[in-house]
Image (cartoon, rainbow over all chains, first blue to last red; front, side):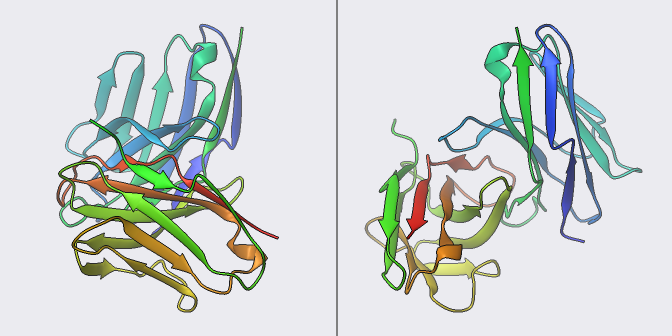
Length: 113
Length: 114
């Protein structure tokens, strides 16, 4: 019940295309859903996060879509660029207490020129 | 405004030795989380500490692993009698307080056990 399932494991997108990564969870106590970007040899960096009281949040080319009833959320990267090539992790936590993040397994994104 | 600092960045230990990983949180942050990332896997929560207190160590292996965050100085993750399965990247993150505040991650320590 503590798991966050992420798909696909890897993704190849052409420059200018849309990258879509999906995550699903079981624990209905989760109420904070961040996405992290990680480049090789670096630590994860927060991209964007959402609370379940909204269905969508957009920051620049990055959008989170959230479906509370289905217990799913997704990251959309519009106009994907080669510089977006990285590993993306979704995560979840119960933000009411301390922020113990439960991570998905990650999606390795490659954006080809 | 320095970010989260971890050292060493790379650590090689032989089986049976001890590994000490250090994490200095961002200035003003008093909450530290440690995560472990095995190759090709996501990050797994290990332990959450506040100054001088371990709040949640539910992700820590019961033996050989310990963590501390003293009143002064960095947080330390200690692994005694390392085994090859301990080879991983260990990340710490800090936050200013509890709740949904962003966790800022350090660059990680990559531990290799030979």
